Amino acid sequence: MKTEVLDAGAIVNWEEQVDVLVVGLGAGGAAAALGARETGAETLVAERAGGGGGTSAMSGGVIYLGGGTALQKACGFEDSPEEMLKYLSASIGPGRDDTKLAAYCDGSVEHFDWLVAQGMPYKETYYYGQSGEPPTDDGLVWSGSENVHPFRDIAKPAPRGHVAAVPGAAGHKVMSVLCDAVDRSGARTAFNTTCTALYQERDGAITGARLETFGEARNVRARGGVIITTGGFVLNDDMLNAYIPAALKCSMRVAADGDDGSGIRLGMAAGAGTRHLDKVSVSLPVTQPWDLKAGLLVNGQGQRFINEDAYYGRLGDYALLRHEGRCWLVVDDEFYIKPEYGFELAAVGETPAELGQELGLPEGALESTIEVFNRHAERGEDPLFGKREPYLKPIQTPPFGAIDCTTENARYAVFTLGGLATDVDGRILDPEGRPISGLLGAGRSTSGIAVGGYSSGLSLGDGTFFGRRAGRIAGGQRS
Ligand SMILES: Cc1cc2nc3c(=O)[nH]c(=O)nc-3n(C[C@H](O)[C@H](O)[C@H](O)COP(=O)(O)OP(=O)(O)OC[C@H]3O[C@@H](n4cnc5c(N)ncnc54)[C@H](O)[C@@H]3O)c2cc1C
Image 1 (cartoon, rainbow, N blue to C red):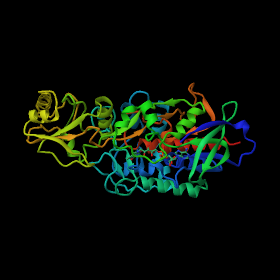
Image 2 (image 1 turned 30 degrees about the vertical axis):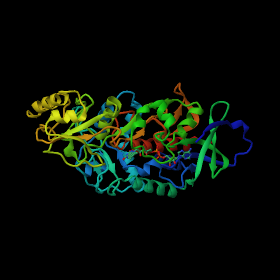
Image 3 (image 1 turned 180 degrees about the horizontal axis):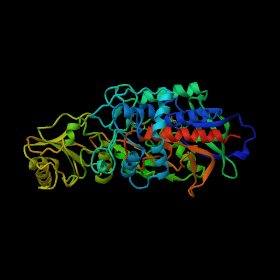
Image 4 (image 1 turned 60 degrees about the vertical axis):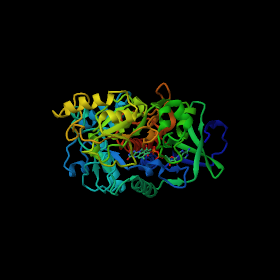
């Protein structure tokens, strides 16, 4: 879809006037509308699809929160904003926004309470053994690499994946609760309504937008601001090609139709800066069930490159971005169990040498990888990558197998993390770091907490957290 920025001075009559215009009704947009309504602002939400939900409704519904939420406490886990900050600072990696991160960790307990107040149901039970949404309606899961090397030695581990009480993927529940809250709040919604242009004053301020419903356009003035919450750009091949071509190799680019980067392009055309457009979250969920963490993930040289007990988002990140999506999980007959998510065996051999040959690996490479791993595993150690018990099992019981983790044959689930540059209150910034008056954003059309080094739940987490802040700011500046 084409987007443009038009001269606000040329408008004689605005067909409609509101305090705050929110563009897109996913998790970020819902929170922005609710934040705006908290200030009493007259709020309109324009959503391109026939109803609210976006990619958020298709997601696992895990929300990354911590610091000692009521749910963590009820499940018997201790946590603090300091430990949460230590983990996220270490796992997110370079390029993070420390101001946003600190605000998110400090405000996490309150944000959980706010979600509950909107009607989000959480069962006060903990589920072990899943790196994301559990198959049950349990409320708390591990959703990152908190309890594995190297992070377990950096911050006190605690599970922080908060999941609404429905079995399996809970994104639809998250969004039905948030959309109901938006309706109750008094915000108006306009569905099948696409924002195709922003209106900009001579001084750069954004004062309105053009909305199109079934081909009919109207110009809407937004006195307090336009909030862009249109999601990421994983469905836009041109943008992926320009910023992160490796993502095009991923078999699973699951997203609502709106994830074509239209909001990011609108913001850029209005002079916004961007951050981390080359960053994605890539999941390689090959170690579900968790017994498969005993396997060895090897690359095209037959060498290990990570502790296999890490969160599957970290496995995917390393496999796709550092090893070209060409790797296999080596297993033996003792612990092999059929993987979930459609992963299949690529080869089987009676010896490591035969398996290596079947995979076309350099002669001797796989044998030496397995021999070195076994030698240390027998002593309960993994000095190369720090994998821990109970997944430190020598690979020794034939037949040996290699689960296919190549991008051609395996499930790599990807979505984009980078977007418009914003400050801690959701104001969109120009390339010099100055706010563009009247333009705000949240969710995956902006760059949020995760800039690589993903943990599940950070996207719905930062989208709702900073969306609400952006809504309050826009609502407060109406005149
Ligand atoms: C399989 C899968 C599982 C996931 N699981 C999780 C999880 O458990 N936890 C987590 O935190 N993240 C998860 N994610 C990531 C997460 O779903 C998204 O990053 C998040 O939903 C983005 O929210 P958003 O509000 O920014 O965008 P969206 O939810 O996509 O909402 C954007 C809305 O804007 C609309 N829109 C777009 N352009 C326009 C326009 N020009 N005018 C009007 N409307 C427009 C769209 O139609 C859409 O409804 C998962 C992703 C995938 C693919």
